Image (cartoon, rainbow over all chains, first blue to last red):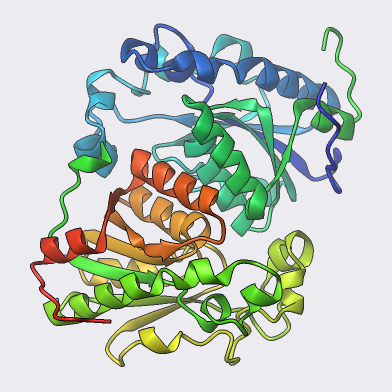
Length: 213
Length: 211
């Protein structure tokens, strides 16, 4: 059991949970990363932590937002990433709109009242309505989990922080394909952008007890 | 792979991130808060060579400058809660010597200066409209610090579909592990990692004994 970490003013008030890209593409063996023979298993390690955070947020009445990476069926919105940097993502149908691949994994399926933000770039803030959702709900604290730690989670955390949201990244509810980039991402985020915390720290701050936690 | 990205001199701009006294001088704010400014200063020779080459090749240059209002009312959570010591040290206060560009990398009158008060040079600034207006597609990024303002700017450039190139030996970070981690991260998905010499070759510029 890791030592409890200081969560500062985090509580239930003005707080949202932001779950990043927990989709079949990344988390399921039959998803695009699995088909590409990439290390989807390390990403799946984020799932139990995300499940606990989601259950905790629902129990505590905390606003939940699911970010979802989705490309148009013809990848016309994929840009330089798809065209030049990683054309293989298109060939393997990563997060293609309307497909099973792009769906959020069953155990984290959004329920009524939870916001889904579709994005086609790493940061959930870029070219999306995320910021206006958060401002409209007067959110000040954002708890971030999901995949991948060093890519979409970190881009989103950097953006949340420079928009002056008090940002918390939940290390044991994030996953990255390589351990060194997972670790480096937490160090970078922890240096200037976010408090790095654990699932239990967050549940304690929300004053939530989960059965079988 | 980001290695697929090919740098050319056409539709290209050089962005020099935050090469200011604050970060590069022993009397600057970084030194005052006990961070290793000498590792940031190590980026200066590479930035000077890139700047000289861009001027020679006619490649547009953009200098970004981290600037806070004198009372830090625009500092937000960073100076209020996360690192209040930056405020005590007077980091990059508008109008101060600390915020000025370092002597060896002063902008010329025809070079754009983008003031920013957050890590990314794209956030709440005119940078993107400058670049689009000039029809820029390729961005070479250098300056400091590698894992903070450079990386945030590179991430933002990449997701705005600029072909992005970060110059390994023209950037600096206060600790080695975040320098290495940032280059690996950027090279994974966001930018091709290059050397100053490789950039000069791509621009077809030869420099004789530039600083």
